[in-house]
Amino acid sequence: MTEELADELPAEAVEEAKARAATLLLAFRHGNQLAFDHELDLLLAEHAEREVTTLLAWIAAEAVRKAYAPEVGDRVLRAMARRAPADNGAVAVDEESADAARLIEAVAAGEVAEVRGLVASTADTTFLLGGLLQGVAMMLPLLPEGELTEITAELRRRHGGPGAHVPEARAGV
Image 1: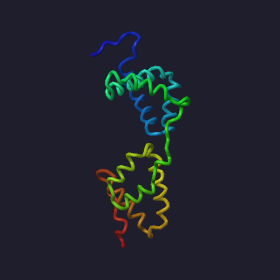
Image 2 (image 1 turned 135 degrees about the horizontal axis):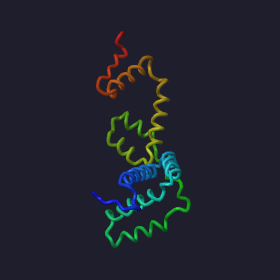
Image 3 (image 1 turned 90 degrees about the vertical axis):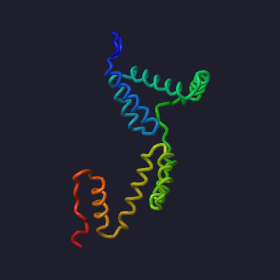
Image 4 (image 1 turned 180 degrees about the vertical axis):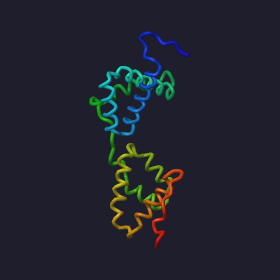
């Protein structure tokens, strides 16, 4: 067990700060501006920015240490510092990279590798899934009557978990 010094954070607070730093990094990495802003607002309201900033710096230093040889790490960090944007309050969001039409075509063709590739290459899958949802909504009026009920019943059967019993939609037909 580690010994806590008087001016150190308790171990529980460190673990909580690590989790918050990870949440902040994930939101930034995936281009989720709303989640990033929400978590940042919470941190600022609780005056926990110093702890989280320290942990973010530790995470970055660990990433550099693991990815680069010692003699290269400092050069990488200096290059990053030179390229840092002046306005760093926004996360990188690329709506154009989310090609929902290609995703729908790949799903329809059963091209698992292409679906995985599209999802993996989309920086923020929120836009991709939003486009997919929009496409599904546009297709719904084209379904024959009763098909939607059967599809949702099948989804509930598959994803309802143990004990989920949904009667067949066309049972009486």
